[in-house]
Amino acid sequence: MKSPWVKQIRDYEGNTLMQTCLQELTAFLDYHKHHPDPARSITAPDQLLEVASAFFQLKGNAVKSQVEDVEFERHRRAVEKLAVEVCGRGYRGLEPSTTAKEEEPAELLPVWPEDVVGNQEYLAAGLRLARDVAGYDFEVGRNPKKLNPVLFGQGSPGCGKTITAHAIGNYFLKYCKERGVAARFLVIRRTDWASSFQNASATQLIKIFKEQVHGFQGVVGVYWPDIDTAFAARSDPGMRSEESNILGASFGIFDGTLIPKSGKWFLMCDANYMNMDEATLSRISQDPHKIKGPNSAEDFVELMRDKKLKDFIDMLQLSDQEWLQIGQLCIDSEFSGRNVEAICQNILTRVQDVEPPPEYYQVGFAERQRILRELARPMTYQDIRDLMNRFSEFEMAAEEQNQADQFQTRVKEIVLNLSAQKAALQSLGEK
Ligand SMILES: Nc1ncnc2c1ncn2[C@@H]1O[C@H](COP(=O)(O)OP(=O)(O)OP(=O)(O)O)[C@@H](O)[C@H]1O
Ligand SMILES: [Mg+2]
Image 1 (cartoon, helix red, strand yellow):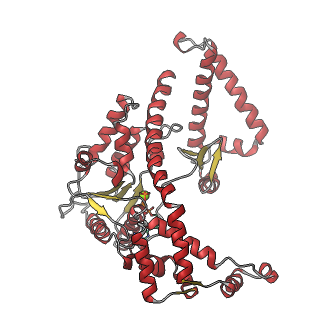
Image 2: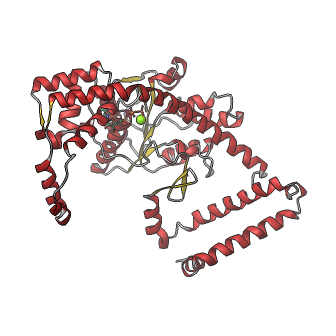
Image 3: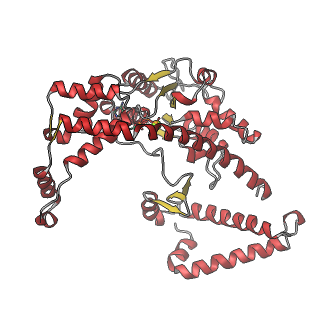
């Protein structure tokens, strides 16, 4: 059954809709000019802005509830795939994201346990937890196994925390599917609970845990990345105390005061070693895992030769001994997994840096691939070593500073969004 407005939206053309929207805004402002409640009536020009933004908030909410109709399903899904930026604000579909560039993907990345190099102990602990949670007994409402549902890992930037968690998430869903167990995996992003636009706030976190984790008819895995930002935001002097308290309540997930540790769910969270003090750390977990990333010459060889560069391995003319030296150079240069990924990207670009012949543009994809391969430029040990040394010289220092700045920016963003939104709602009379 379609509501009449669905047809209306479809039939109206854009200009008419825009005019109607502006007319409604004028009427809304007019109404507030002589609002029956004097506290809400507009007396100063500044208030025009507040009332106008309240109008658009209402409108936005209405649109969001209306596009739930199947009629719009296809379009909604298409729009959700686009990252759109308007005046420096990022949107994905109709949902705003706090930054234009999304740092954490909402959906699981296509990575599997075998893609992860190093991190084996953490990975194994996560996979074990995933299997244990899959064994929850829905009839009795308990898990026959006693388990600690919180897995916490701490590691340096770019050591593979995110991909390890995503690999465990994919494994968990597949494992449950094969056994006919209803399951879901959630990734908690800052934009889900600290966004200035939608009604996302710290209460959203509590809602996620209560409704989408505890209330879900099935087993649930949750990944809360970069949790150090949430902890830092909570104790930031700029944070309003109500929001700080709510955020604190959501941390009850760790000690079982928010939702029971029933064995029906598990939570993976991680942080950078740089930003987390011992006291906070011990609150989250008695057993924090150190995530080291690739940390031997052999690990780095595996990451480069066997994983990231494997499609072009025939273009890289290195002996086993030379590969090991490359691996050792990664250790000596203190490269992270992410650095190495960037280096491998550079290598692949170099290998494929060729001028295709005119017929390239006339042939199909497979043929183009073949031409590229034929023209590809091999690289030697010396080439790769030079490229890595240049990377180490020019990119590393900038990267480190970048990481530190990024943490501060994220914390500020959370504090600003949570506190500013609350203030704005109050000045709108909590409509
Ligand atoms: N241990 C690893 N195994 C395989 N690939 C890795 C590993 N570490 C890093 N990488 C590569 O580096 C990229 C960045 O890793 P990832 O985002 O998981 O790091 P992170 O630890 O979450 O970093 P941050 O602290 O910035 O959140 C990955 O996409 C992956 O390609
Ligand atoms: Mg990460």
